[in-house]
Image 1: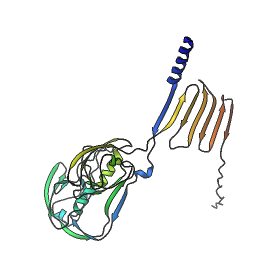
Image 2: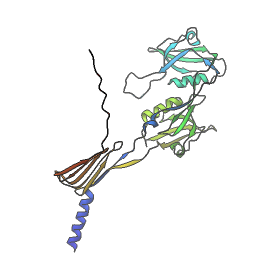
Image 3: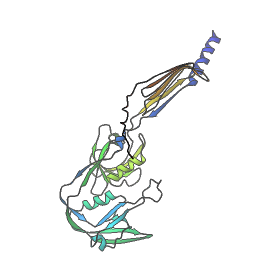
Length: 312
């Protein structure tokens, strides 16, 4: 009886050691990576500097680190920027003491100014850095102004630019990881992963580029009462799904995420299976000991192209 017990234990141990299973994270729907925005095109007064800028792209196309400042692509004639000495190709580093590392923050800093004033500007030309000042003027405009940006996938929240050009939480969905961290509407993101988050648009863009579902997140947040605190959470994740399980030589089962394909086998031997079933969309394949095989599928009617007579 003892020998039988030992033999049974050995069989169970061998079976458990040969059992394997695999899980894979479910992918986010493609629509979750599309930035959603709300805009306002009502006529208003806005401060005018006369610069058109774009993101200062790194020289290394594979780098995710954005160099400081925004690149000047146009300078309006006789504008405050032209009088301040700006030229196309310059890098605007700061606007009235605030860093301008993305175009949206630069636009928000301008939009936050309600009356004519003089601002201090810092810009780079080649290897030299210059300081200058410009007297802004107020112009009437009805150009579209971004109200807020939405990330539906990883943070599941909406953000707008604060007066300082930082992302401020507008709305938080019920399943947002920000709620677990105690971040609520009205809070301002001061730091993201230890770095300046940029404007609301830049912040959402960085999240899309650098964060994967379930990744750890670190924020420095300022509440509406002015209190600052560090919070940690994880990006939202849709979870994982079983994609493969096998107990050799009894059976094996597999499926592919995002594709209508799968396979199932019973009695897996070295060169063949006692029974194997494979599915690829509407097509099914069956095999017994690789000797008897048959397939089943769904007929799909295709319309033949109409014949067109060609005349030289």
